[in-house]
Image (cartoon, rainbow over all chains, first blue to last red; front, side, top):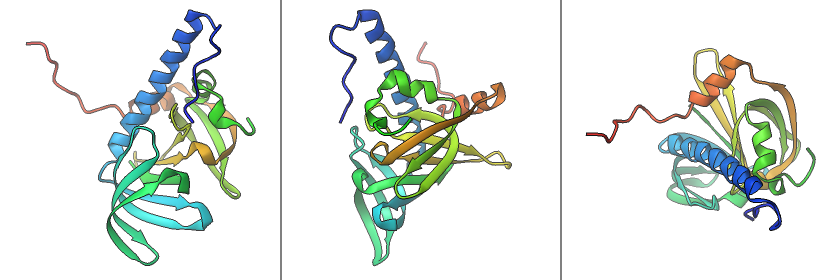
Length: 94
Length: 97
C-alpha cells in the first residue's frame, strides 16, 4: 500500500521535493513512535472493541504493533501483536 | 478531502501539517487536533491536543480508516513551535572529539 513516487515522466526536481516531504513526514512519525514505547496506549478497534496495553514497537511497514500487558475483554495477555488493520485509532498521553 | 486519503501522497499530506483538522474515521468517529505528521507508509495521521497543564494527548488515526479530513485553521507561531518541539529527542552529545 506504499504510494509510489509521482509518474515516471515527472521531472527530477519534483521527485526530489516529494522525497524530501516524505522523509520529513516519516522522521516525525518515527520520533512519535519512539516516544510511545513503554507508554500506556488505548487502542480503538473495529467493532467498538477498546484495548489497553503498554506499547512496545511497530514494524517498519506499520502492519503490526508489539504490545505488553494487553487488557482484553477476556483477560490480560502478557505479550501480543496487534494487526494495524484491525485498529481504527489509538491514543496516549505525552 | 473525501475518500482516497492513503493515495494522496507526501506533497498533499504535508499541506495538512501544522493545521488544526477534524478527521472522520471508522463509524461516526470524529477526531480534532493539530496535525503533527502523516506517516508516508501507512498514511496514518498523528493529531496532538495540547492540555492546559503543559502535557499533550496524541491520537494516531490509521490511514486505512480515514474517511474525511478537514482543515479548521492554521497554527499560530506558538502552536507551530510547540508542535515542532514536541517529539524532538533529548539533547544528544555531539560526536565531534
